[in-house]
Image (cartoon, rainbow, N blue to C red; front, side):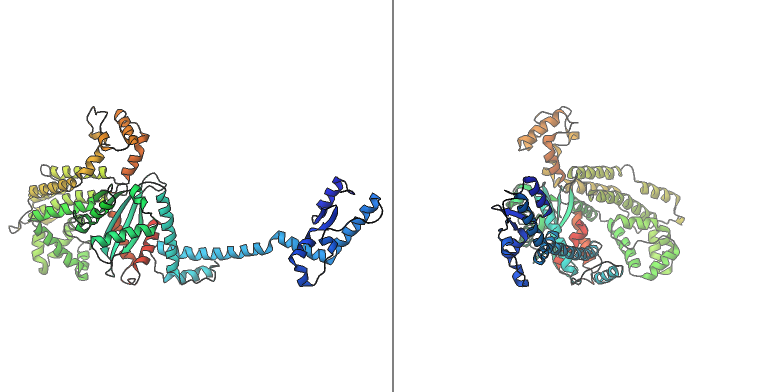
Length: 578
């Protein structure tokens, strides 16, 4: 600094980035660093101490030009020295980070290969393909030029379990920080004869409407209520839910009507209510409907003749390929093999295939069935069951919808009850068609002959029994339905009180929102939005659990029964939530 002016020094610093000055003497940053690390001792190269220790200074007299010239000569010699050249290359390589970039490139290649293998395993799980296809898909992709890496490709089950675990972890993380939660559970036995508990959740997860999510499939030690509660709570804990989370966010518990689930004294629901007092319990509406129909058919004994005939048809065509082939030859209408007594599908199949069935029964072997089928008594019973089961099947399908809410389900059940009651005075479409055919003595070009041995179904008795049992199934949830009805403006009086519904609410925000809603029924109230969101979370049916068990049986089929329950759970989680 006492020789160079500032401008000249900056020019040198720009040209020789390794040059530095301490105590008015020059030194080499590269040499100093190399001496500190001891790199050159290993290679047998010596370094100039004056450049390492910042001892280089100008020589000669006090003339500025001579001093500058001597410094330039020393710098030039050091730049051209072998040692400094090697050091400069090392510094350039360090700046370029060759090793780090090489490692990154290798890691990137390895990660891409791993991702390809993981995507392949995910594809198999999502589409329910056997794991035996994994190696073939890997080989195919390698033939197509995809780098599949050198990792062990035969651990696809471990890969699937890892993916499922990460998905479950992310799902629970999003739930813990979001909204209210409803739980649906059901228990069944898989093809390996193992008792299992299936767990579904319903909640808002970054969406405008609540969605159903598969959480886990748990193997049960036995099917007692204590074991189910213990396995369920352990499932929640293993999934990542804290002990305090259900107390605040778990609002609804839904199951079928089995005594082990909803028993008043020692059922699963009762035990959970002791631990979570504010939990709402709900009996699946589809199971209620099924019980109501079964009770009605038990009360009307004349339906048994119709059931027996339908079951006989099922046995004839489900157990004999020859009979099915002959029926197809008699008509292009193929009889549905998936029969169930008193189901709409059964009645519809017989109605549609009426002519083909009669032609087949005309043979000597089935003459008695032909006479039964071609009687106006049976035709009227078939038409009645068709009309009734058509309404019940539509109701059942509606109740299984993902967007179905409990108030909407109640409305649909009451609507169906009114339709069934109306059939007593005004027959359905198929009944009208059957009565007309009875008057003409012919149906689908088949002559009808009365059969005095048949006892027709008492129409009024069957319809009234269905109406009574369906109304009874609704009364099981009177408390919850009454609580939810306060938000249904269609049920309010023409001039509702400002205090309407406030006695049922226990937060200031909800009470204020209810008062705003009473004064302005058509406006959206922000204070009521959290409550409305919570109510939309309440499921009315465990149809998702039934779908889950169907998927479980498709995955753990008879050729894959060796799969453990935990492995099946991983496959189901990817298949449902993926």
